[in-house]
Length: 324
Image (cartoon, rainbow, N blue to C red; front, side, top):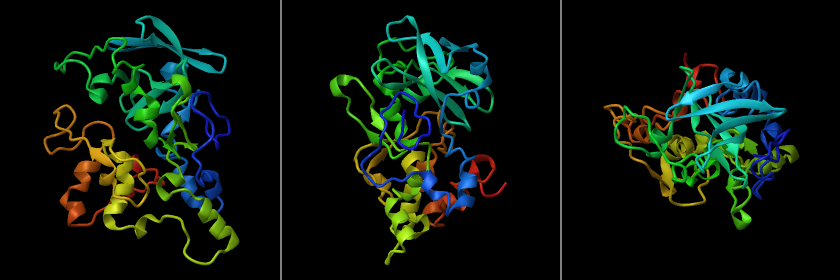
């Protein structure tokens, strides 16, 4: 998961970045110190972290075995590497290099580097508020049977098994967790599946590539500053900026750019399962509130936006709420 602006790139995905004018969050600090101070402690900034004693939960640091029915995972340390020992695609227990931690507030997921260069989401996940370990296969990926009282069983080799394509970090998750995401087609089926500029949701995730903006300010160029300002967008496009990640959806059109209508590029996934939504249709898991929010009267008639109540830069309050 190396990136051009990481101080210590970790092995996994390709170093480098899309060929666009990204400058990285560090270039924004001098002029935006107050915003940066709040952002660096936010869940946006820390939505992906390199595996370390400070980013991993105590049970992994203590090198314990955790149960996540129907499976289990034993964690250990090999020098600077963290190891997750769990069942692999051949049905045998295998050691994998645990490289990164994903998520902070609700669900914490862990990434493993595969021998062919792919990065996959490990089966053991942690519910942050309760500290309980579980296997999220059924809720996230729709695998298993119809009896919600029994843990899902996905056989090695199935697409929904944790080493399969459905659990691909690069294809399924990364676009909302890294800044400057670009998919990569590996040569001969081996190698990285993505490249990017920064881990986490940085400034350029919501404001667009900042190279032209930095040049405009540094040289005092005439004309309008090219940086995208959220509040200058039409109301529906303001909401679209957040919905690019906060709406469960399938990509149906490539090339989404900030300021576009998200529904021209994404097909929202309708949540109808009672285990995933409450009676009013609000999602119960993860942070996919975008569809019910964007279709609500508060948005349509009252012109509410996400930043009415939340500050994406961070506030110190739960869920980055503006008001405690």
